[in-house]
Length: 302
Image (cartoon, rainbow, N blue to C red; front, side, top):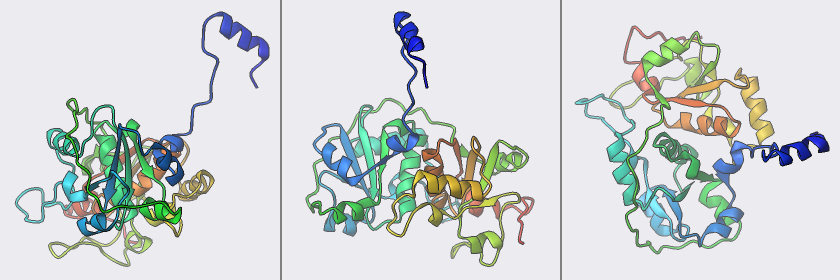
């Protein structure tokens, strides 16, 4: 407890009294109730993550439709990098965000409709990567939570005026396979495999019709499946539950969480949860799809 005399001295010197900062979760996560109170805010930009038919059938009033394909690069042709899901360059992201009505002073709320939780967190991560993280939140529980509270949805598509964004300042949140290999001896970084435990253990191998991944996981990686951070209703677990989960999986307080999955989507669910606990985060964007293509990068199969 701060002594009363100390508060007097601080005030007399014109120095602000010490304050407890709000938990990161308060800024990153918004409830349906709180969102309803902000719905008339002219600076609010709502992003509905799902397919077009899902959006058309019913969305929160004013929401704009967005999909992963809108803000990522997918190369299934083998002509480029060959990866399924990658971050675009800054200029491409800026143009797309402005087309969604996002401006420098926008307050952005992302929610998932029929898309999985990890699609919405990938959108949130991309906004953070683009320097817009401090003004971006996720609707806890997505559209289903909104509907459970008896709140209305609409099929009306809003008129969207293009936003105005200054050139993006990309944050160094995405790492390469070389960075991951170099991080394996760094005790301040926790390399986390966000895939289902069967993939981590090598009982199953991921991949697509274009290529199969090797079975197993990156040596030294911890297993923390993305499904563990939400409950049965896809609500983010409580701070106490998440802290216990991360500790049980071997992530220490203060660790930078470096996560990967199959393609770079599921990992963002774990990274979002880590951010609510105050961890710094990094995404191996190429994830196991990238790692497994190179024989000189080892794989552990228990």
